Image (cartoon, rainbow, N blue to C red; front, side, top):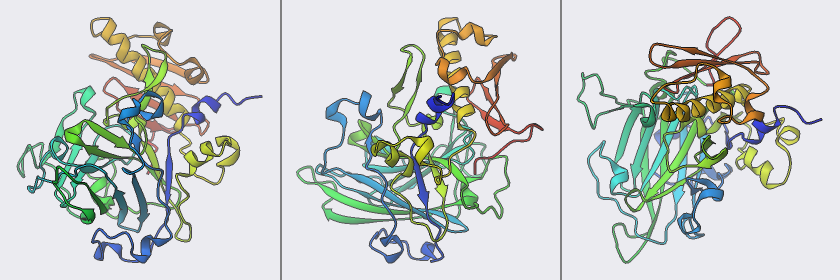
Length: 387
């Protein structure tokens, strides 16, 4: 008999298991991925169009000469990302001033991190091929009236100023020439993301935070080319589309609920090649073949909560900004196999709603609000963190 949660696990996003290191990589970042510390660490799957292979036009998918892949390791203070960006067209790198909007003109590599999977106060880093960086935080996604916090739009001391203090990046030109309209270039990058910086402005104290083995966070990676018209990502941005009653891919990086997972592995382990996704490629089922790969036990409730969120958003657009007051009002806008295993209640607020999904296998409840703020709480009401 099929598990009622199989549809949920079939939608589980890509997972990369990063091995722990004892080598002080922070002191040796130079953009070179041939260092011994990276030698036995597996690359991720290659990036594809942001909409995923089903919805992406063939012309927008990268050809074999434009591969993008990353590796990851971690220590007690940082998550390290090493990536290679190959190209058969012009690589542009014009911005030299920190916190410039790189994606508008330059070729860039982007990292998005939502430590607790709340869809709020998540961090973004953009880097171009000459190591110009832009750090920003979003209090919520743009579609939910989110605002940018960065040194680009605010000065120190102002409410919307945001800065990182323990990050380090380095880039290296591997071949070709930058800004050559008749040529191409490939480059690599190393990034050290501080856990203290990543947890800033969350409800968890960032001082002294060290991930534990098998803990995880939500993450995605993007490569932007041609003034933002080309978007290749690690995890496709695919979410529930109530209007079309299917999961659709969108050109929208600011869908944190669609991102993948980074798992903090043991020091002796070597990261499998996107372990969960690899199982798909081998034709094996997730539930029978990924027992050794840590998964987020709150995932079934999370995707059910997001199903309600997208249904409510569609309902609101069709009803002059009003939200449904009962789950029954959303019939026809939900993915029934995803929501039916749970008890779902909707409580109206002064200007929105709060929906609660009960019945998660681990005993937790998942709460989602109209501004996409997602929380997982235990039976006592205490928040359960992903990281």
